[in-house]
Length: 274
Ligand code: NAD
Image 1 (cartoon, rainbow, N blue to C red):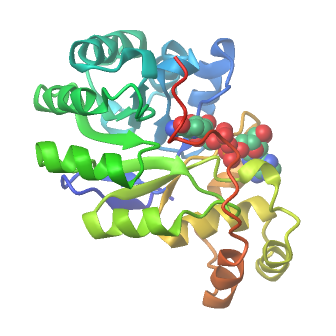
Image 2: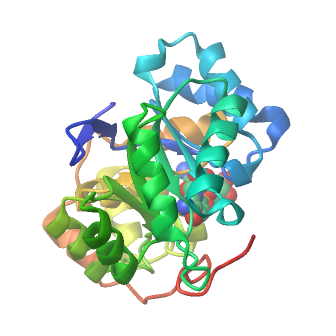
């Protein structure tokens, strides 16, 4: 099940992982270990989720060798700027109990704060020092991507953004494709708002899968990496079971028509919360 996507720095990332946003700190180790035992190999965390200790502990508890697990964390908005980002990454590694992460992201660009370029330069330093194997961004839009690439010559391996049937971001995904940036979809299930949509229901009936599985498979077939969250073992299992069926071109096109440009989460052009 651990199908991989190749990154522009020659590394690779699983197409499917699981996310730790809103997973309680007290149960994160258990959820992480369970997910890894079920077959997940990518754990998406962030400093702001407040559960990096559990993320690291769960990886150790799974018994998997470190190099079998792809670990992501993110630098929070209040830690932007060159020196602060360096310190924030070290603090994350300490909480995780790891000497490196596989992927380090800038969580939000915070364009008004205008520190994301300095933060990006810090990520380049951390990559060069081996503290992050690969580096990328999250919630960046085209102007910020163009700027960091133009100023540093280093292209993020990935941009983790909100994508679901109601918010498909075709222009941003085309920009990613042009520059060899992997799209990673957050809130991939879109708060269940498209589960009842006719094309999702029809594909689910035809394939003998759930609406959630159809939507996650749609992400995979878009070429994205996808990181759904579930804290229930049955939900984790269901979301892992995506690789024994495929959506037809007509089903993909019908789901494409559900795009309404409607976000579940904040608008990255304005979101500056610390
Ligand atoms: P999600 O789309 O994964 O949805 C989670 C919700 O769907 C939960 O309520 C869960 O119980 C339910 N669910 C999960 N599997 C289901 C299934 N098979 N059937 C029915 N319901 C199901 O949303 P999310 O947690 O918002 O996003 C996933 C991950 O993306 C997060 O955990 C986090 O790691 C990441 N994320 C990143 C950012 C960012 O700014 N970079 C923002 C939000 C989320």
